[in-house]
Length: 129
Ligand code: FES
Image 1 (cartoon, protein in one colour):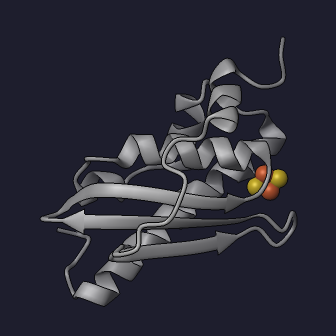
Image 2 (image 1 turned 45 degrees about the vertical axis):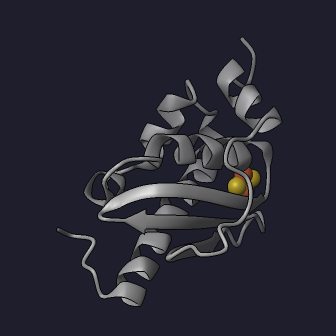
């Protein structure tokens, strides 16, 4: 069996939503101290909906694929749904990651949560509602 699913390879080779949102209202940056990989998520939230999302990831192929898939999973979704996104859901949507690469999907969950918290502190709008 191939180490990586076709979906992982597809999102690694053709990542969706790469870049920066200049007028983002939620930005989250996280890193993994062990491997040194860094992920930054930009959210544009309007009326409780993630209208746009982009990312920059300096990291391994699994981290790039995880960020790409995570952006696809949250784009157009209400904040209260986006808050619930887990790294497991990201990995499942990619048809799985090897065990020792699961931490790469954790970066995606953490980057989105950090961006939502940033949105909350910038706007004063609760992400719990
Ligand atoms: Fe660090 Fe993948 S090896 S995020």
